[in-house]
Length: 222
Image (cartoon, rainbow, N blue to C red; front, side, top):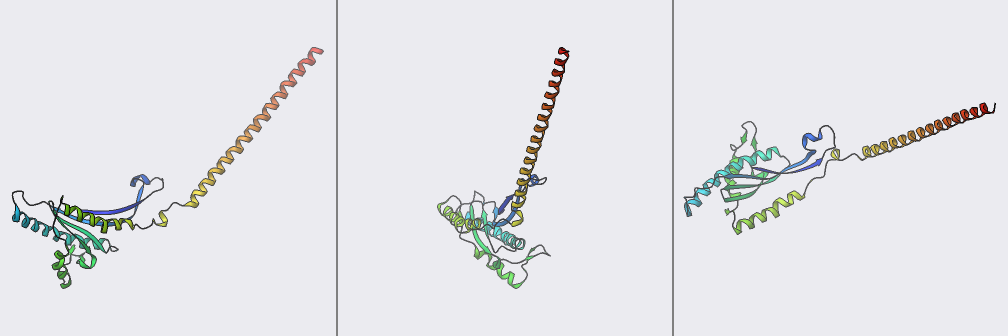
């Protein structure tokens, strides 16, 4: 399981913004890689249970070596990642540095473990992990809280700024506002002109009515 931290920005409302839920990701980084495996059988107790859990966690750690190598190949700007290896409720963790991880072999599509340097890193891999913890115990809760405060929260706090090309264009907004004001002004002028023409039409109609009345009066006098 790969857990990432993603920051997004709201897209302008155009024909394509709804395809991405109206958001665009401008930052993404890994926070942790977790390998969860099935725990030992419940029929095992005591030392047998602990030994079986340790074997399962070793397999999880081996998988995490592969995943970490792939992670650093995909995220060249990242220098560390938190990893968890778990067998049921039993877990261990480590902060893995780029320098502690074998490089990814793109030709073989796996971690390169054939060079002398990478073999040395592989042998030291298990020593990077913490002691064993059991979920739901006070020691486990205390350790998880410490991991969050020392590693996860600081990572989330250092979020890069939104790229300039994704920020709203103030000039375009001002132009739109000016355009809207201009349209409103033109509409107001047109309304005034219509009222003037209507008033002139009314005055002309009144004059014609008065002429008709005057002519009627002249006829009566004659």
